[in-house]
Image (tube, rainbow, N blue to C red):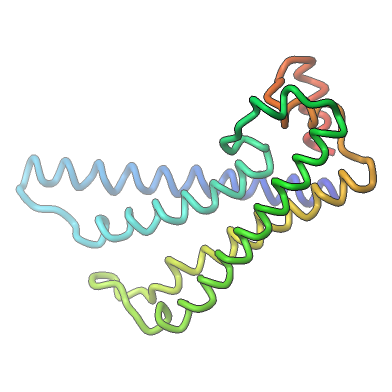
Length: 180
């Protein structure tokens, strides 16, 4: 199961690279066209904006797996393991709540976005803003799984240290734990 999850996230990372590369090509191409010929490709302007939205929201899920989102460790660093576990569960409950609100908002807007079309490409805006479904489910699921690991006692010491902002230690050990 962990291999499937690892493969899934490697696929997401590959998708992020492709999205970023496509954005760079489109934006740079438009800059060159505007500089040399005083014109640009309208489709590339619109698509690069859409790709930026997808890049941001898919990237949030990838970063969520690596626990690399912004955090305030000042208080948590002073707590022991039990205090860190309580804070970890509380923060994950907060994340689940935010994901539920985000999912519900995306759901509420889905009908409007499905009938609203981009001005140049005429892509349904649901394809752009529907990425909120993926992000809310992805981040929420990871938070639920982490709560389950804390409750069942399967959260590692390294993960507790990282939650408190302490990233010292054996890098190979950290990589091994992340892949498990």
